[in-house]
Image (cartoon, rainbow, N blue to C red; front, side, top):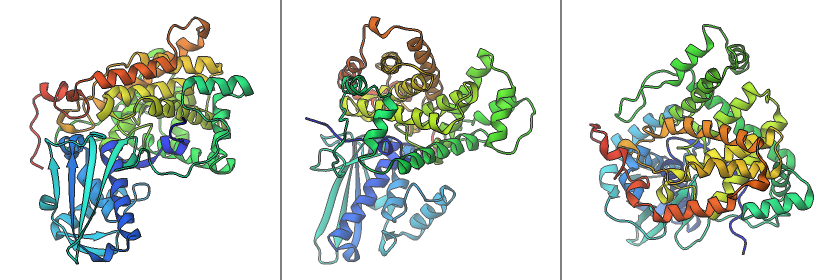
Length: 475
């Protein structure tokens, strides 16, 4: 039986940081609940909204901006278009005025302290990231809905197995890496070409190409912005932003005024091994510092791991002469398919599988994509993905203070470097001699996730989160 159908635009979603599971997902869930009220034609009858947060959403929700995301979602704002510099103003209006414009249409009284409950000791069985919305109507009846944020911005409503989406007839249905390899062998197509053929079932090719290039544009803008923004990250840990200072050292005083000139500058700084390592780290740091600052990012496949794929893509563009639209599209299509295989066979949610499900998956996606655009065979592409994930197995998710900062930001640099190394190993290897398949490592990752103690699954109840003394301000 075929699993969920996943498009490139499901794996790569434009949103606002710091977390796809705890920010983007709850935001979308709030929007869906408002839409549900509209469908039932009861939105104008609502007099009160109660929000119940369970499991990981309760334990690390404040640090991940879950409360902020839900209020914006209930207000009818969209994470793709909402101006990030207006977040504080909008939230201050709601909390100070104790009023909420539900769906941007209907005003109700709302007290965040009383109407949003963080149920730290309660969890729902389907998934650790759960939120229930309860709407009291003026006729003294109630309408409610429970939603699960299952990773990567994907949201499932109680009683549904997957995110609701119209089924299409895919020419190449794929659930596993073996399925993907079967179609490549049968057709002779590259992995990215197989993906593009499937995308045609949803929309014309030109629309897909434009959409993918827009995804890249958002990644590029986020990286450039992060490389030129100094200061400290919000949240109370007082983590200094490093990408700006590192970029300044790397460009060695050369001047530029836009991305294209910046690209030329970094090429002129040389291509020594140390220099390239520094640049890749700079790219990844920049993205995830923006993510931690409620900036606009792309899930790749999640927000916490949003820096890996753009960093490796930028490495390809900057140091492998890859600034070509066709190859950028090829890169992102390949990455998306590998990500979808992990989502179908395991998870991309740290609350379900630890950080192996986020940084590990993003590294595998990036390794596969880089291998394809560097001319690797289909089997070498899958081998690269396997190598990258194999060396992330068991990685825990233990964010200090529940913030997507330490160790999350640095882990993106490690994931990017591992992806490049995995790609190089695969390109220099014979897949016939590989001992571990990508499907085997997906299965192993899921088994590891099931065995992992819940303390290490985005709850901040173990690991670094309890061994680093901190003093955060009262929420």
